[in-house]
Image (cartoon, rainbow, N blue to C red; front, side, top):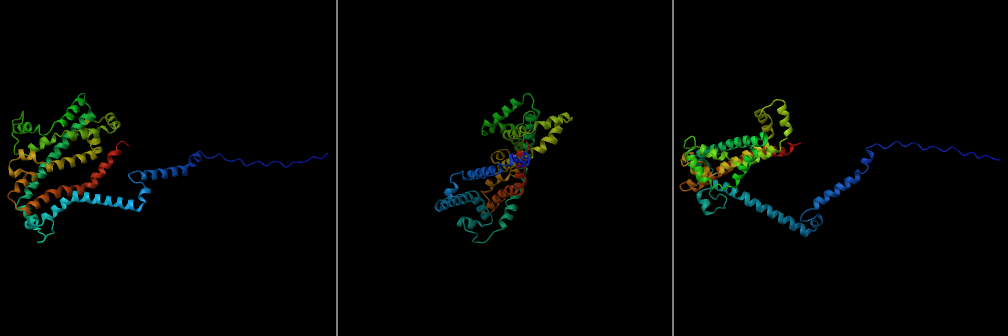
Length: 333
């Protein structure tokens, strides 16, 4: 009887357990493929897909129509400003004879100097800065303090006051024009006549319910936890307002300043009523009156000065303004 000896079975090496993150990292290529597919789908969403744009005739038509649209928008929006620049340094004869010719008699740089001195554009420009600057300062003060009271302090009557402020938006400005003018002639409880005073423009401009609601809406989205922590640390309402609310409200303050300043700069009807004295009138009121006596070239130069200053201010501060507006969505984070 023979015995067969079988060789011992070799044990397979024990496989080490896969790390916990291996199962999660395995489908990464699939996720990448799905991400690329989603990006392609998002790129194809629109009037024309990538397959449609691959056709030469359709692509040429689409790009040509888009270029025509952009050029049309540029001509409509920037064209009048460029023509005003041309007319401001042209002679009256050139503007009347051939409005679109480029300086047949040469560039008249003296128009800007004569408009500044002879037509007194500099004095009216200073009045415009006073009107727009004072209206902006008072409007910002009323809007920020009023919105802080209604949104952060939240008294019992906050909802009723907010409803009343909202209701004033539905009242046409023409309806309150005569009562507001009579109020300026004889201010109640004071008995002061504000006619021919900048306060007659500043005080009505400060009661801007639209700006108050915009600032209040921004304050409603501020984190309440910071206010509660500040109250626990012993901070009062003024300290919370000055050290917490104002630093976080730079975006809405920038928007408020820009909107209010531009509104005060181009205001015409109300300054015409309450500032009958020509020495205190802004450019928006003085230029139509000067059109009856001043030369056309000097009038165009004055219009150019009145338009270029707000444009230059916006271009100068647009980076800070857009940066502050971009920080508005980061407050909640």
